[in-house]
Length: 259
Image (tube, rainbow, N blue to C red; front, side, top):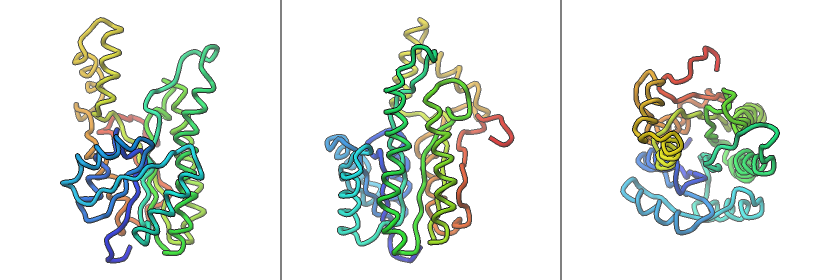
């Protein structure tokens, strides 16, 4: 990228992993536009991240192509360019259960929000990046696509495939597309899930957390900031030849050699 301060978009920017990603980008001088559906949550997220740098909240809906097109046009018109897109918008509740009883409609909505949403945002920003001759697209996946634990893991398999296909399409235009697959990350939502699991089993939430962290060689969960640093690495200019890759950030939690 040029010496001009980059402009980044982070979808799903009002919570989850996004604060760590936004902070990493903003602290290096990027103008970071965070986007999600709820204006109130976006405004609060921007307020909490104000010390990191320039963070601008703007609403859009991952399931609405027209709204995304308007949003991307607004960003381009306001800032003149779009250098980085980080796709992190997704439903936060895993969908699983027996195949006979699974809510297929809910599962497909989950896939559409994440995979369809990623594709919609990419489709909207690519024309801008092609004109620039440069751009970084980073898709946030997850480890559930590597196990048989839950059906909603199929969305993360799709994220890896989407990343590989688009990296091949877009590399001739100076664009790179990569994915980051975080492991177990300490977020407020994860704490809620631990609480629900603990209540169902009649134990303390700390016991559930201890069981999970015992499986991580680092013996602790990741932080959103650590995920953010991995995203920042891919967003910067030097690793342009890293393209179409799915990078795991999990403290060694994944034991597979090739996955």
